[in-house]
Length: 304
Image 1 (cartoon, rainbow, N blue to C red):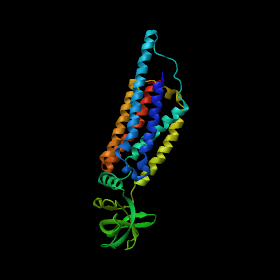
Image 2 (image 1 turned 45 degrees about the horizontal axis):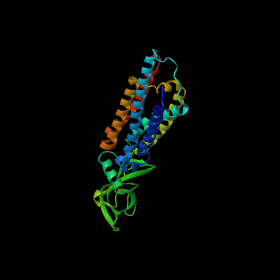
Image 3 (image 1 turned 135 degrees about the horizontal axis):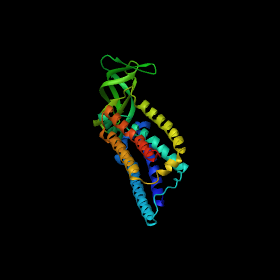
Image 4 (image 1 turned 120 degrees about the vertical axis):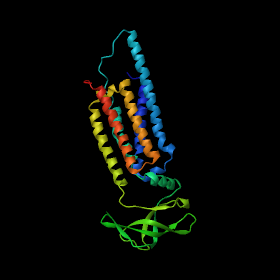
């Protein structure tokens, strides 16, 4: 049985979850997402959490009142078939379920560990990735063994000409700078730094990173998963309709699983773990939406 409160909080929860997941996909779309403030990254999740708690409270009160009413009328449990969920609500739930793992995995894309913290400080200081000139190549360049579009990647210590914020170019020496093809003075390289904060230093771009490829595949899998989930749940709208009736044994474990997934992803976002640990945490977080869906539909199965 649904009321104006359960319908309103239910729609707000689904809409908030979709906004939160799309917002969480930013790291897979742009590395500059790490520069967002903690408040900006947390706000959609906090709003969705409040809406979800509101739905749980409203649904629990509705369930209790319905049981009390049936007790007064001396009637047993309602055996009438559930009303199928609407197509719009079912489609929205499908996309939320499919994008949940995608958004969780996206948190592991991009710089992490000490490099992630440094990148965040540089971007928040107004810095970014710039093209600078090689002033001097120190020592003998060596091949790294990485090929990019049929070009060899070389590495060597170099002196770079860097334009700082005071207008005067500075000569900056870095122990490792990578280039496509053998480097020579006058060539250009990519360098990340903040011209307004000299003490942050600078780091040269390294080729062969898997972040961009991983982000692209995560987005593709999210799109494919959304299409598949929409088709699957639209075919079972009667079962989806039963999700609207609060049941502690169904909804509380689902809420706990989703809260666990959110907590694991927050560790990835704010603890800056090493790469391997970050991906393990993100994979664990990505498994919680499918587990929650499996538990819900297992409980709703007539053979349970």
